Length: 493
Ligand code: NAD
Image 1 (cartoon, rainbow, N blue to C red):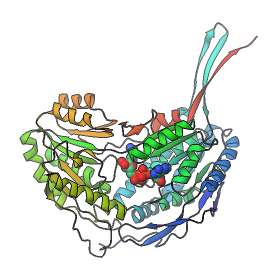
Image 2: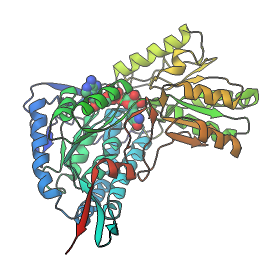
Image 3: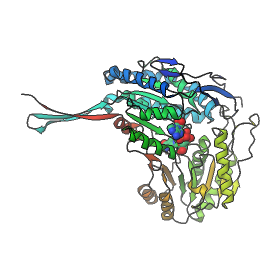
Image 4: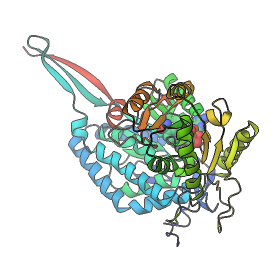
């Protein structure tokens, strides 16, 4: 099938968006952004330094003074305009995402839709941000009220796997509630977020929303500078822990979403055809690089095992791997050479620890893309819960099939994991589903759903090592994270 055209072959040298303008940072350090399917260099990204970041913080602090006085109804209208602008370039955003991140075009379109949905929710700010009051609340003739107020400037430190959506879990809520914002995209995939900023650059007043491209130094400056009130992070667990501690040391609000190791549990009464199709999307969508991806497949009892495993392997063999701009492709490459090396290391570890490799995606060749970072669907059977591949986050298209005998054993295994991002059960039995939902310690639970991606009006949850903090991204949690309550007690003589 013919490839969809790339928006641009080369996106040139990126700048930062600060105070309503694209500015060349002072840093002299630049890194290449690579297309993981072709390995072509498609942009140069500045690795901004402290000084570059402080310029954005100062601009955002200055903009806050008038932005917080902009009535919520007017702020909501900005959101409508932003939505329209993003809709106009919907397809371009999706294609750029494929080009720099590797996901298939359908996944990229889905992600673009999810990004815009957060703008739609934030457009309801006039209702979402209302405070509350109580007449005679303190005593007779003394009224009491709680006003919801914005705080200042916030920042986001984003991962590589959802280049468009993840900053949109946060910034629309921050800005709609009257704060100003700085996005630091992942250095592996900055182009999408820069392009989205370019798409909406005329809409917000200067300084309200800024993009600073870079790496650790930008992140550290956001966490340390007194002009930043809080930080939202999404990425791996070790970095989430560091961000959580370091932000707290500097008296910032912080929400830090970490890694995952999600189990998909199949009971003997599951509707098998639907279950297999759903699990294939969960394990291999985005080449397994989703924090909500299935990692362990757990059939409970022989009947479930016999009904699901062979069908799943047959389905996995049919997945078409290639460049995501080919609409017939189901799965793209992993994001980089380093990611591929790490995943191959885990596959070797699985073999060394005695798991049975029943589908080996290592040698895959994609005609025309011989250098790309492809790994085909890979499946291990006879995995035991103590093996490394059953416990650690691989973040690639690798499935560990773990046979279990009872649902109680499965729940015990899931709860023994350090991670608590997501878990799913496939069954028609309401009691089993209810026990699973009730007992499993994970923030996102799927019942006959393998990718438990909260809609924008629900929080994106996560427990244990998958989340450091209390308030999550999206929905009401995000409104609370970006605001405080000011209590006023009034008496008139
Ligand atoms: P990462 O932790 O390597 O990087 C995330 C961000 O942190 C990047 O912007 C990076 O520049 C910055 N960073 C990395 N090390 C830093 C340091 N020492 N100091 C300051 N900043 C630092 O994560 P990644 O590889 O980009 O993303 C993949 C990970 O993200 C996976 O573990 C995945 O499970 C997780 N993830 C979690 C969720 C969730 O909602 N829980 C969602 C998406 C991805």
